[in-house]
Image 1 (spheres, rainbow, N blue to C red):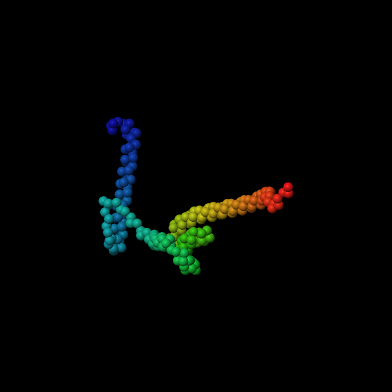
Image 2 (cartoon, rainbow, N blue to C red; image 1 turned 60 degrees about the vertical axis):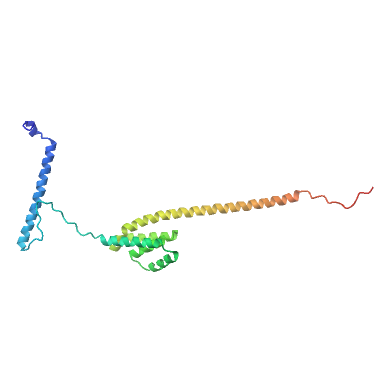
Length: 217
């Protein structure tokens, strides 16, 4: 098969791919070795010694820089811990937190106040909580940006909670309207019954009075 002229004119695709992969591997290895040689020459020209010497026998892996997300993670964890505390607060404690956080304009305090207001489970407070989260999401500074993912999640949750609270209020109002109509209907029925009783008493014949006189013979 290999001695056939047709083989060299039209080599199989499998061999072509293998050759390309081998060429790329040799090229990358040569580039890595060349970069290490250039690095050593630079250190020699500057009169310094490299701290570590990498060999070409192992692939060179670039060290990832230190992630700046650590402070953001701490802020989110602290906010989640505060949310868990507010979930167990009584009404008096929630009111104290509202007073304490009301005059502070920082994004952290704004989100804390939104969490406190959401615990009242009332439409006005829930609307105020959504407005506070909107301010946090619109704030471009680093402190607010660290809280943006959590603020977006809470905003979506509060929107759903507000929709459910609105539905509950509408159903409660409808039940009140139905109960009011039932009460009015019962009052009208009682009035009709009273009229019927009075008419019955008027139309019924009066009982004959017994005369004490005896008929004359």
